[in-house]
Length: 89
Image 1: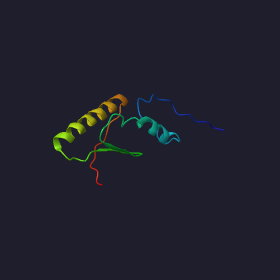
Image 2 (image 1 turned 30 degrees about the vertical axis):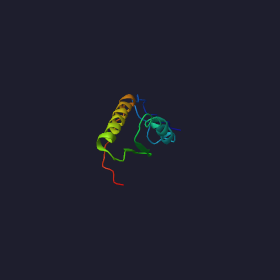
Image 3 (image 1 turned 135 degrees about the horizontal axis):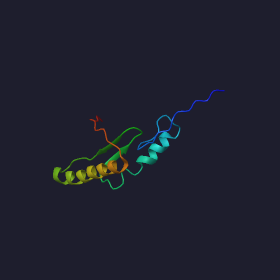
Image 4 (image 1 turned 135 degrees about the vertical axis):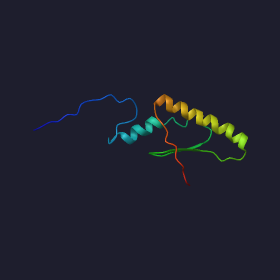
């Protein structure tokens, strides 16, 4: 029987792709992303959406901006980047 091995490499961040544990690790990895966020956040398998209904621009932006700063800090901590896109709902 012929055995073949791939060489090991260091993973700096993220999760292994194509594994059975991938979805579970993904949920565990981003589970705390909405902690401390006042706006509404929807977490999906491959996307996260932060939004807030704007009733008063000065008041709501005062709440939304700290949420964006919080998510920026979370990304720095976990060495991840957001891919901002336009979302149609």
